[in-house]
Image (tube, rainbow, N blue to C red; front, top):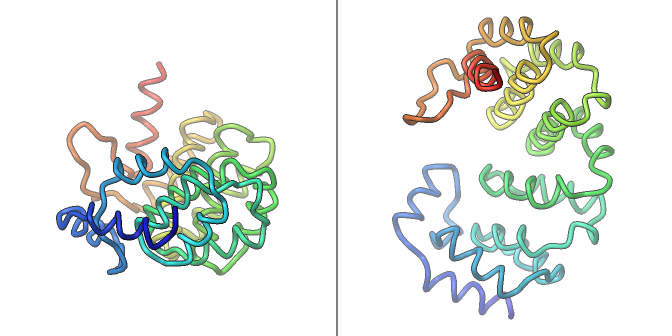
Length: 221
């Protein structure tokens, strides 16, 4: 299957409501408004196709990039290629897919994490904090939690919105998974007040760190 054929399929499958929803979430105009289920169905037919994935990514099209994350082979990517891809996508929904399907599965992700935790590139920093959230949860021996809390307290108020989101996740996961640092995590969340008034749908947990932490701890009991 060729890129032109796939884009033609996307055009047929496009939905104006989905397009509007993507726009509301931060997507640009290079999109058709294809539903996630339809993109996944196409990915199932293609399976893994690394070269096609790179071609799709380079179109800049929203649906093409979603599809690329599903059919790319992380083992064939270099650190520099991943960094280039991460920097090139500002729509956080795609960035999150690339993180979940590619970066989390990448063998040398710790090297990337350490580099991205000290970069001025917004999207790489965002991914770096996502990787750090994973370390806090699963491999805390790789991180200095007190130092992370210092950085969050000092840097999160002025961080780019894209970075604030994943930095806040790190703060919440420290509070949830590490009782010895819970009070400080709660204190930082209250002090900064970031996402305090974030609109939250019924049945969902607020991203405001103190609410998030306390709710997850309550569920663990």
